Length: 159
Image (cartoon, rainbow, N blue to C red; front, side, top):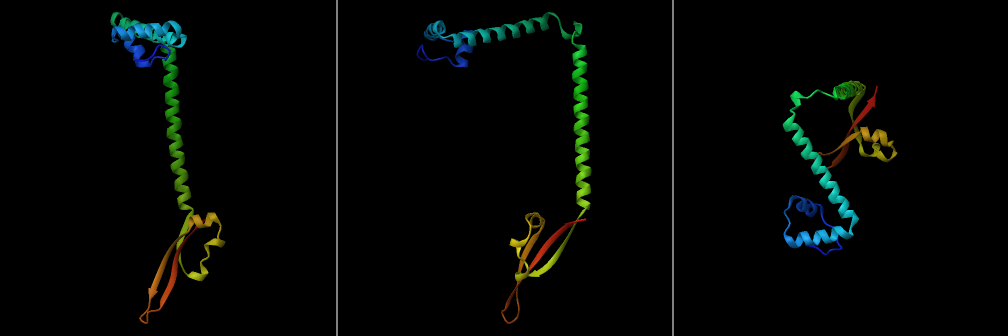
C-alpha cells in the first residue's frame, strides 16, 4: 500500500472506515495514524461526518418530514423571498438589455460606398471607425484584359 511515513489517500481512509482494507493495510494505516496527526484528524473528521449523516438518516426514518414541526419556517421564507427577488432582478436585467439592444440597432445606419484602391486608406482611419467598416475587394477585367480594382466599403454611422 505505502510506507508508514507517507500520508494516506482519502479513499484509503474511507476504505478503513468501511472495513474494506486487508489486515496488512489496516496494520500499516494504524501505525501511520499513531505518528501522523494530520491523517488522524482527517480520519476523525470523516467519522464525524459519517455519524452526522447516519443520525440524520435515522431521524428521517423515525420522524418523517410530514410529522415534524417546521422549526425553520421563517428561514425558509427568507430564502424563498430572496430567490424570488433574484429571479425578478434577473428578468428585469434581461428585459433592459433587450430594450437597450433594440435602441442601439435603430441608431446605426450603414451603406455601401464604392471606392477605388487609392482612396481607401485604412491606416488613416480611427480604430472605432474601422471596426464598423467592412470592405469587399472587386477586380473587374474589361474586354482588353485591363484589371480595374475597386472596393465596396460598408460604412456604418450612428444617428
